[in-house]
Amino acid sequence: MSKKPYPVLLAVLLTVSVSAGEPIETAFVNSGITVVGGELGSVADLLNPFIESTVIGGGIRNLLEVRLLDDPAMQNDPDIEVASFPGIDVDGNPDNDFDGTNLYQVDPIGLNDDGEPITIFTPGSITNGNLVAGPADLDLGGGLVIPGALLEGTVASGGSSMDTPAIAAAIPVAIFDAIPAPPPFDGFPFNYDTLTEVLAFLGVNPDVDLDGDSIPDAFSVEFVLNFVSCQIIYPVTEPAFQRGDINLDGTMDLGDPVSLLGYLFIGGEVPGCLDACDANDDGALDLGDAVLFLSHLFTGGIAPAEPFENCGTDPTADTISCETSPTGC
Image (cartoon, rainbow, N blue to C red; front, side):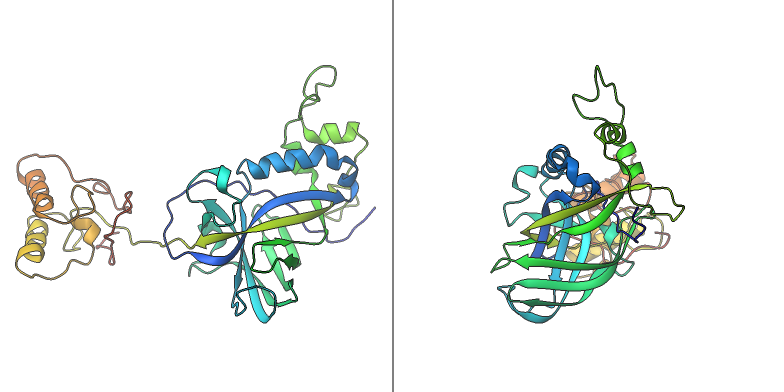
């Protein structure tokens, strides 16, 4: 029984959010995971179709960004680093995810408070298309960490794809306990509930002790990762605001539409949060916004668009923004 500090493989499921930022083209998206060895290698024919359907279906979107790159062909560069983070498909269409140019937003979960990647493999280099970077500790959440991981891969000229050599890892039994048994094992005569039960029936048993208690609690595995090129953007976090609080004093009163009218017609001070001035959230500032604010204040007219009752961010993509949050947001 092996008792090495095996890394852990985890599929990260993502949810879609609004994206913004400048596209970066020196990036890859994970397009394939193929089991090739280890204890799980004996059932690769069962696992690989399941993994492929999960990847192609959009459940796994892990991104790499090659940074500090001087060689646009990605073949020779003595000084690079590689950032790793989960990503979100911007157009929400899995059919074009691996076409080589698809756009992803970096999931904020992979960034620190300053908006920089939490995981960066450094130092790194590319020599004749062979990329080596790291080590780095890859935190996958839930207490699962790949300690001291070294990233290696062969990059196609021009950066259209990258393939890794076989990577030794271990997958906790708990991961398979949470996966329902696939057909035909979920029905008569098997009636298994989990993939762990199916593996046991096939003679595949845990062979790695991750927690050091002398009881195997994970399956050894070797797998190859495939990547294709993509574009990525980093999320832009806008300050929270309250629509109608134009002078940023924490309340909405007559002074707010007066400030807006002054800005629109007599060269008054530019509001610190233009989104707060856009009463109907149509992406433009005009007389109609001031009228809506005044109507709501004094004649019981319709309320401005959200966020109005409470602080929030603009739910609509447009060309105006908020540079300064009001008091209380």
